[in-house]
Length: 383
Image: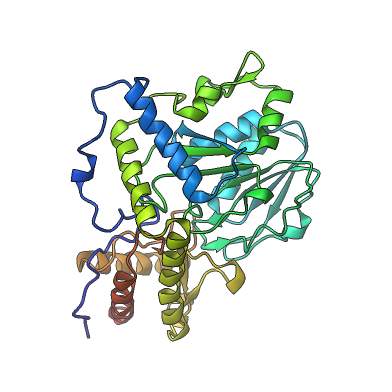
């Protein structure tokens, strides 16, 4: 039977993700609109985003953090274009975003000494093959596959290469091991439920050393440049952004960070994420028609949870028919205001993708699970 209780908030998109509980446009009333972001109040607000983020994430004091353009994508591109080429590069790819970074490194940067360590959707490559003498590029959490690295122990602390990590769907949902990383990027639109178009770029002292000691053999776009006349542009890491940011988005990010503090900081957001993931895990364990796309429990993402159909009636359909079934399934839930935006990423195999990050309320996930069972039975009946 159709469930009688709907999620209070049916937004389960994996990006932009749902706003924090209790959010309304009223939180933007203090935004510094109509003013220059380079004014003293503008720089103060941008610096506050940087300082709060550093403190909440437990980032080492000797790391630098900047607000950069073009979301997490822009932050990663700045790192790749500015840092790669001094050494050989290992790129890990097991879903669409890692594959995209591999394409950039090999084709667009023209680096010849590149090793691609890859695996298909649902699995990880052999992490032990990553060479500590080479630079490393990888996503922490494969948002489109629901597969994440289990920890940072596989990255050598005495590495000679740089570890460059796209962590956009991990930061604030997973505690990052800073000593194992050199570049970490994310965006406001993921785990803190902020708005899009702005990225965060964190650099270790080793990454800064590379910036200053090595000049990339390629022209850098203006919005990528972190060095001028042989010195780091320090203002970028104090709120003097590389381009014009939206002060409405900055105000929204400050509200989101204040909410993170209110739920216990990083420990609180990680706990909320784990509790949310456990709701889905418990349901999957008792469900015969679906399973995790990530086959190894140790590599299952707690934030972007991807689920594959396991019922033979669906698995045995042609690929096009499986996609049609998924689209009808998701559309039925959307029409009922039970779940929005839970179909897989366009590059992923037919599957469900449910965001379980900290801005999602556990009660909403608990209410969602019976709706998934109902929608499946309703769509199977049409076959």
